[in-house]
Image (cartoon, rainbow, N blue to C red; front, side, top):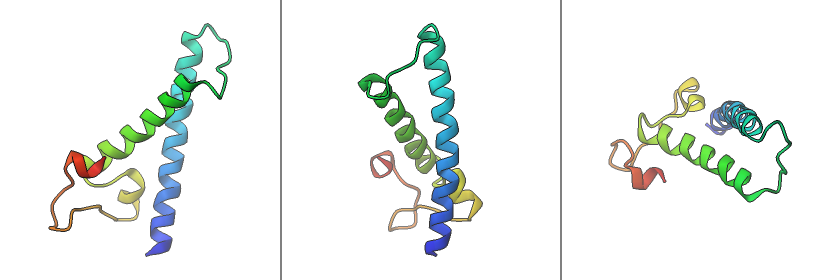
Length: 89
């Protein structure tokens, strides 16, 4: 079971890296091609919001991230129902 969770985490890491690269490319485009300082609070907040939205929306609507779907894992409440938004956050 631990291997499956670790593999799902790795799959989700790949998805998140691609989302981060897309967000960075869009941000650099709107910044007239200038580099974004990595310590910028706005940039860090953007990446944190993307990561939070990915996990919250994935677990809320379907109970699975892409990594969980690949390894046939599901996150549910104790009663066996889908997560509510409060539980997913």
